Image 1 (cartoon, rainbow, N blue to C red):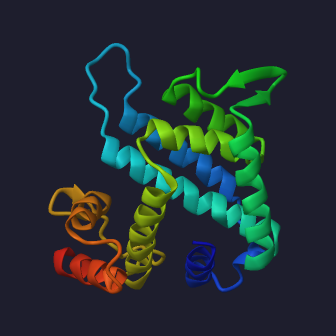
Image 2: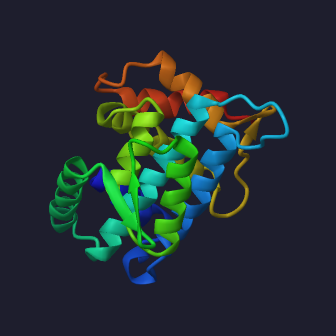
Length: 210
């Protein structure tokens, strides 16, 4: 995933390491969008869209990986060592201290976990224990995260190939967002197929409006 993310960042900007983009700011925004897909308005009926909530979590992971890569000057091997250490620490501690208060991650709900992720990211901090707790409440494990990450990485390359950075890309396809098409396509494909990425890209091409 680190290699895929570095390749995506290079696709967007070959000088992304020197550019030092605020990836954790992007985490803040994506986490807020996840709250929207969950539903938070107590004054109206809302249904949780789990598939889109999971997709927002994948977007968050993209930016967490990007921030870790940036902190390690794009060195994937060094970043992997840091990432494994952060994951080990996350497995050991089900709680986190923030703003002088200890938060038991197993005792707080998903919306509160997302708010905590936003607060930490705004403070330019990464705690994978929070991300792991959110994953659990989104009914995802690390294998599922990987499979969906690969799918979204393909969509991100597809977007760039079709004018996303230039502003000519169409994100709404026949009344539906491209993310929704991606979810449907991934559900029909075998993530363990050696041609999974190619088949996914071809399916996106077939659905993309002229």
